[in-house]
Image (cartoon, rainbow, N blue to C red):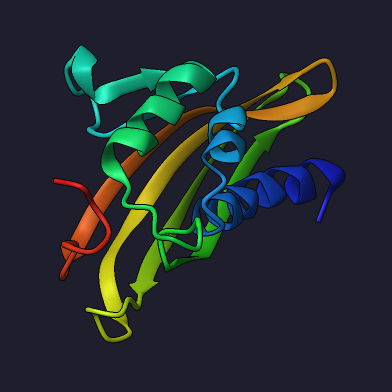
Length: 147
């Protein structure tokens, strides 16, 4: 892999690690120069741009337990990268599978889906530009989401 490919792949995996660790500031920081879209081509209320808005979205939606985590594991696979190093832009697709176990919920897959991501390089550093999240299969999300 090229240096850019490694850096972008690490961004994708860092998102999962921060979220599973309950580090909402860390997740939000990945989108300091970007946004998360809950719906492709969705209305403005489904777009969360910048670290502050992304942090607020996760704070509003994600159940955090006494150990400071959501008790999840986000497994990201099938990452395909398309990089234009000259332009400093990239895009990717990947799958995700989220497992969870809580005192009330035995270990199980709670949701699967895929991401469409774009990235841009700013002052030599790769950043998320846009992450669009798609849910392909949903299980019991009652212990993960606040709504």
